[in-house]
Image (cartoon, rainbow, N blue to C red; front, side, top):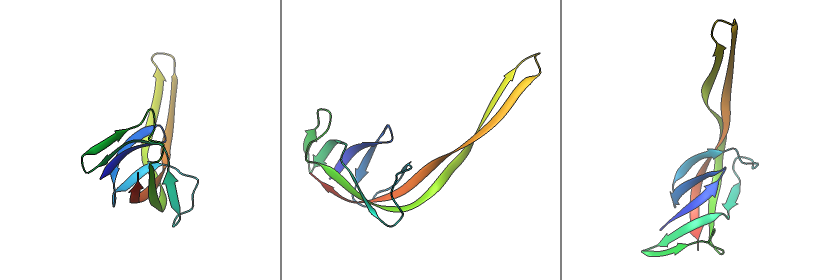
Length: 103
């Protein structure tokens, strides 16, 4: 059994026991979180596709930790003008482990 869920503007294909790094969630580590934007559920070959979401489907996951992603360097420059600017960004991530998929 697997599901396709949406969080943080991205879609993930998940099954029970999967570990994901997703956009930062407003939940403390060690707690449980329920994703209700489930777009597709495959239950042993029986596929349910939402329009846009499956109304009764939920994905329950445990929040393991919060961390920062890799640094991305943004470098802007205009030639012959003496202008250059360097910025960095590290995205806040949450590591979750999927417990179950309720359909």
